[in-house]
Length: 270
Image (cartoon, rainbow, N blue to C red; front, top):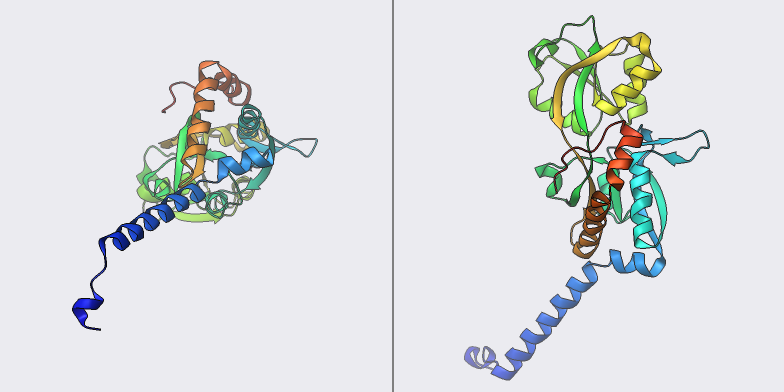
């Protein structure tokens, strides 16, 4: 067969090929967004939550998870009319849980930034949150330059780890730990001079261990909490956003914030 003959394809065949390709793409698009359908059919939603980050998530006296993030997970499940399966995660593995479909949602004091937005999607914010540097009152720290030559305890991969890395002097010694309990324990034991964590965690530490005599020093980031949703799961994203909007209007988010944080939500970004 000549090259000209071989390259000739009837118009009807071309149209059929294009139609078939279009149908394949459409089916792939439908199959890609399976989370909400699976949740609806199984009557169960898998939500990743923290258990080492009070008051957002921790293990109570009854050995069950509790906290603001846990309550938010339970609220979303209730609004969907399904059971909730809570999956304890750390700052380092919460996003991989979502990417590998071990979890349908991540509700783990998750802040939004451009790097994370490349790999997962975010709902509207559901709770306030900010990270800061804390240290004993006797330690003079007025600017990030004052951290030079000091050591800091921080949870690996957490927002405060990322934000402090952007502004810290090169001589600041980072001591990274795999979860927040280890970070707090190291600082409390005097392994570092400074602690980088959330205001809520620091407040809990101050209450439990007033002898440390620590105080707020420097703001790292005002970073409200968002629910993480896997890329491509637009139907689930829209559904959770509608639940958050309704809960915000009904005052449910305000009530959760006051119960667990001791203050209201303030202005939350959508």
